[in-house]
Image (cartoon, rainbow, N blue to C red; front, top):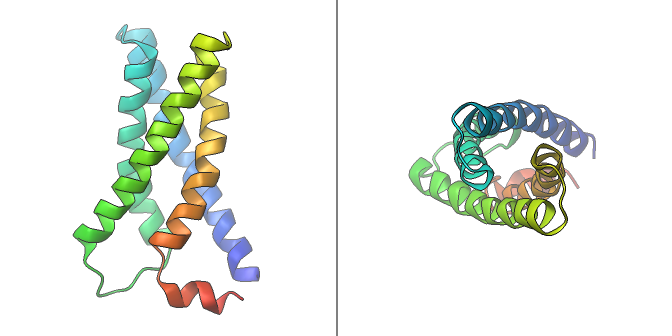
Length: 135
């Protein structure tokens, strides 16, 4: 249980860093470059996925040393694309349907997607032996 709590803590730190990357790029693209918030949100999310993969694999999730890194990255990207879809739906519903300011909507979307990301990566990315050792 202690290992799981430590892992969640590390995931939170990585998530905080990646949220900063995501949020800053989204605001810069929207406010400075005049790009629509849905497009800038998608671009910023995609960039943060790459940063997140690097940090998650090195700091949070223990993967097999001999794992095919290309396959691992593809799985990570597929899971992230599902997260992106979830992010975009939440952004659209929050901003266009509910009238919430896009910067606030992004915080809500990030929180929801963060929970999805941890669970899906724990199931599909982490070495199976690690999960059993935590019980």
